[in-house]
Image (cartoon, rainbow, N blue to C red):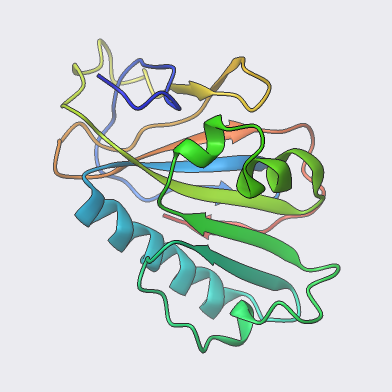
Length: 174
């Protein structure tokens, strides 16, 4: 059983850190129990804030994730030209084509949504160690490919929706 934003699951891999190019993807989904996914979203936001100055990055928090609100990256003034990372805990906003989150991802340049998606139950283990894909629903309705980082129910998993060629490199180790 998956949230409707997740089209399917094709396996997991061991807990390993990896790099995600946020300018090459439209959506990064953190999948797992809410208490863990919210912690992962806060960690990603902190890593981004430490690695990237507020002149280059705008962190836009949707919902109550417990992110520090006084980060200069959260100030929307002067956001034009900065990479906008929208952090949210409501995956339904990805499904609803009229939601502000979905409209931003569909229409704006230099925007990435990082959304927590609750995992209803543990997924079956991967058939082989090389099976690293997870499919999530694309914003145009088609499934897209991503990666998965854990086979444990208690650990969150990540899925990416790729977009055509990256405009510049903004990496986030997760």
